[in-house]
Image (cartoon, rainbow, N blue to C red; front, side, top):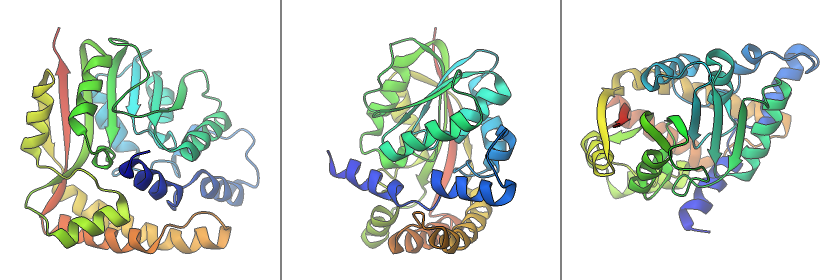
Length: 279
């Protein structure tokens, strides 16, 4: 197991958004889990910036529709995968490194009866266990920052896509070089292994054979979203502690405060990339 793997799985094992806290909240609000609808679960399981609206944007970028075969890199608890399956009638395979999140994704998918269209499997996005040319689209949201060899991830996305398929993802970016102390805290708190510019993302995508269709700088929008998410996490921490579920470690909350500040000062930010595998 690599150091980055240990850091990432450790981060997500302690993350305050877990299957356990989601189920606890659903039981508290509904009294039971019988007949749970995807829309009810989506209130709690979208652990990415922008919520379900961000899923719709990626679906449009990636041309996801009826019976599209989609792979979600770093799928987590499977919230976006279930959304794409339910709202776009897609078949979605999630690749997720953390075993506890794979188990949690299976449980949440079972609760909304989407097992025939969604499967999150344990795997590494630098060595994806899917056949070449088997997918119509690859998506990912704010997760590739955890991977040290992001060029290898891009190569795997290109490999698994059919000709004409699209890779649509969002990721952290840096606008200005970070200090060693800031980089260390983001690593300690949120397992940020790869922090590169928009231009470097584009260069690496082209280097593995992609054609860039669009790059959208989301830094301004993220400045607002992240401040809201910080308040959410601070509230969720006490709720998770009360429920006896993972609540996150101190470095996570310290690094999140730093991250929000860096984005609002536009030293860091985010971007959405859409790339095409040419026919």
